[in-house]
Image 1: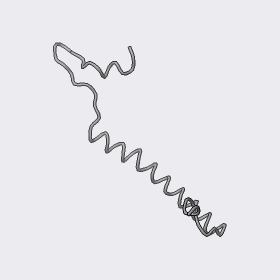
Image 2: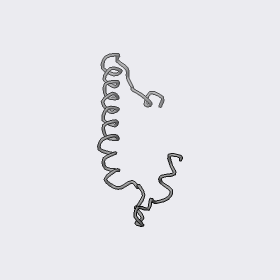
Image 3: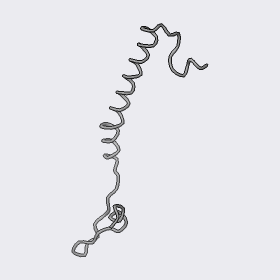
Image 4: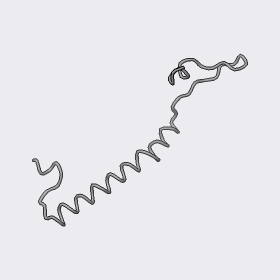
Length: 69
């Protein structure tokens, strides 16, 4: 049995069809709150640290892609 086979047919238990798994709004909210936002927060913090190091410590006049313009 493949890993995706359980999602194709809804199981029948004692003659009752049980709905299959599905993503819900709550799953999306938990994903955003516990996965996406923490990753974005850490990325933002690392970017700000890189900016401070480049501009303040090393005296760069620009930072990141703006240097290419």
